[in-house]
Structures are given as structure tokens and as C-alpha cells.
Amino acid sequence: MHKKHNFGAGPCILPSSVMEKAAQAVINWDGMGLSILEVSHRSPEFEDVVLKTQLLVRELLSVPDHYSVLFLQGGASIQFAMVPMNFLNGTKKASYLDTGYFAQKAIKEAKLFGEVEIVATSKDKDYAYIPGQFNVDAQSAYLHCTSNNTIEGTEIFDFAGHGVPLVCDMSSDIFSRKININDFDLIYAGAQKNMGPAGMTLVIAKNSFLDQAKKEIPSMMDYRLFRDNMSMYNTPPVFSIYVAMLNLLWLKDQGGVNGIEKQNIEKAKLLYKEIDRNPLFYGTANVTSRSRMNVTFLAINKEVEHAFLTFAADKGIVGIRGYRTVGGFRASLYNALPLSSVEILVGAMIDFEKIYIDKTVLELE
Ligand SMILES: *Cc1c(COP(=O)(O)O)cnc(C)c1O
Image: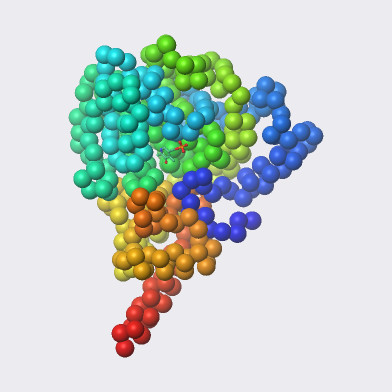
């Protein structure tokens, strides 16, 4: 059904079968004679959707019982403020790992609520790597990290314990690979990268951690209120949750997170191999920190960059322009992007190289 090969970073590609089911539910949901857009969020049918989606999250990520699964709004961006508002209290400081653009945004918000310690940064190399060794103050309220740096194209593969609660922004790689939930005290993720359409934010949090949160905070910023009201303290993003449920059912059919991880490794390997081989392109992230979800690379010069963007667009390849502050290319390989789309992109890089080299040879003659 998809006409284009969508490498966009977010909102991202979703499986066409999910789109079709979602479209049908907009017209007439499960033959009820109502659209999913107009049902009460308090109806038993929708409560069932919330429950099923929570169970799918638990099953796919093996979430232990002493963790809560919440569906919030405000995107991952409101989590940048909500986390420190809840957990950064007067006497303690919070520790942050600075791995790029979104980590910086999280740091900026946290500073509004208390003392922030940057435990390590890779700013010196334009965030091309994930810092390895660093110390965290044992008195810190939590350590915050960004598991996948969507703009810089780096990913954390080791969540070694640092002796303080670990909070992780997993917006752009959740459900893409196996993780051990026990490594984390709180995970958050905007849905629109790998879970569903924009509008919903997933939070997975250890209950004992939530119980330590400050009491005097606005209701909409209080995790416990959402936990105690099945994520329905107010009207939830009904459609986003519904489509996320469809997408997680699709993921389950793919062999779950283990199954999709194998595909994601294969897709990333194929593209990085071509970037490393093709003399017209080069990767920007250090090899050991390379993200499997967002592959960032540059052309040897601006002329090649512009020419390749046009060349690729002619082949139905969209969404590969790098982030506006970074330039170059970024190909996002989220779960629903098939291997065949990566093969088309790699094919385009090979064809483009031939044409470009021929043209350069002609110009030299
Ligand atoms: C996209 C993204 C965000 C911002 O998410 P919103 O839902 O737009 O607020 C935050 N962190 C990471 C890692 C992201 O990729």
C-alpha cells in the first residue's frame, strides 16, 4: 500500500496493515456503528483497548509486575520537565549524561527544578560517540540518559549499573531491541518513533520509585494519579492508544522484540556496509556507538549531497535529509521499515556512484 520508502525520523512509518485497520476503525469501529474518534473513553470497549495495550507492552518488553505502564500526553518533551518535577527535590541533585540534542533539552528543563550534574558529555566530538567511563554521585536522585540519539545517530548498548535510579529517554529505540527493564527505574518514550502515531507517551516506571515522588505537584504532572486511574485521569489520546495497540499486535506477529531486533540488525548492517564502501559517503557516528534506528551520514561535498537527495527522491525514497542543524543524511530504520526499502536505498547509492563517477570522468576529458 505504501507508495514511498519512508525513512523519516518521526512521526514514522507504520505497517500498512495497521494503517488499514486504523482507517477502518475511523469509519466504523469493529462494526459498532461508531468511529474510534467518537467513542467514550469510559466505554468498556475502550477500557479494554487500554488494558490490552498495557498487557502488550508488558508482554513484549517483559515488564515485571512491580512496574507500572502509563499512557500520558505532552510527548517525550514534557517528560523532560515531569521527571525532575517529581524526583528532583531540594536536597538532592540529578545526574545527566549529555549525548546530544535531546539530552540537552532534558538538562535544560531539569535545571528549573534543582541542581544538575553532567556526568559526561560527547560534545567535544559533535556527539559522535557515547561516553564510556564516568562516575555518578551516589547521593544523586537519579541518572538520566538517552538510549538512542535520534539526531546524532548514536545508541547506548550498555546500561551498566551506577548505583542510583536510572531514568531513560527511549523515544527512538523502544521496542526495537531487547532490554532488561530491571536496569531502569523509569523509561519514557514519545510514541511516534516506534510505537504508534504522535499524541501518546509511554512511561514504564518502578512503583517503589514513583512512591518517592514529590507530593505537591500539578495533577497532570503526577505519575501516581495516572497510575491510580488506569492512565485515564483525564481524557486520554484515544486514537493514538488504539493505533499503538494495533501496532504492538503487529510487532507480536513479527516474533516480538526478539524477532524485530534481528531484522533491525540486518537492516542497519546493510546500510552501514554501503556507507563504508561507497566513496561518495561517510558515516558520522563512531562505529561502536552507531545507532540501528537512525543512520547518520554525509556526502563528500554539498554538490553530491543535493544531487543524491534528488536522485533518491526520484526513486520514491523520502525522509533522508539530516536534521536541520546537522545537515547531511539520516535514514531512520524503525521497526515498520522493511528490509526491501533499505535495499532500494543501498541500490540508489550504488547507482548514483556509477553515474556520478562517469559524469566526473566525462567532465575531466
Ligand atoms: C523525538 C524525540 C523526543 C521528542 O519527542 P516529542 O514526543 O516530540 O516531545 C525526545 N527524545 C528523543 C530521543 C526523541 O527522539
